[in-house]
Image 1: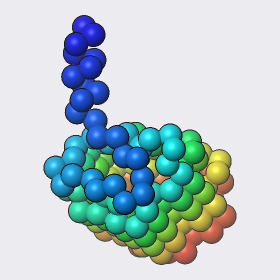
Image 2 (image 1 turned 90 degrees about the vertical axis):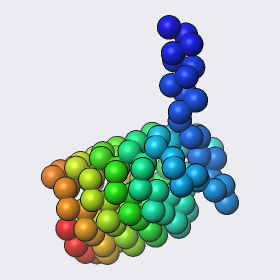
Image 3 (image 1 turned 120 degrees about the vertical axis):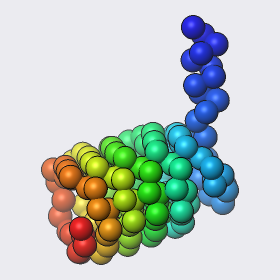
Image 4 (image 1 turned 60 degrees about the horizontal axis):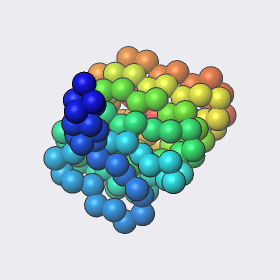
Amino acid sequence: MMAEAHEADDDIFVYMGGDQVVPNDVVRVRIDRSVNMIPTRAFYHRSLLIDVEFHDGIEIIEEVAFFYCCSLISVKLFGVREIKWRAFSNCSDLINVKFVDKLETIEQGAFQDCTSLETIKMPSIRIIDSLHL
């Protein structure tokens, strides 16, 4: 059983932030606890990405950070305050998004062309520029 758990961890790419290059064929990602912002284009066009494990220290998701991650199904953003322009645009398989009380701003087109989107839970939103759902 221990070997199986270790193998499962081997399939997860740990994103350390900065200029780290994310492999084109990445499927599962864990954001390292040292990361507090997902930079512009960090996961741009990672069309096989289905799962991202966020943590509550991530505050900002920059422009087009997850643009065209068309296999991404669900995101739970625990500490995020800001979602920038087109951050999750063209995530066509994205079904639901959940935020907690820290969310303040969603910029224009953040979820544009997320054609499968059914639910966005955002208890504390203060500014929505234009979702373009």
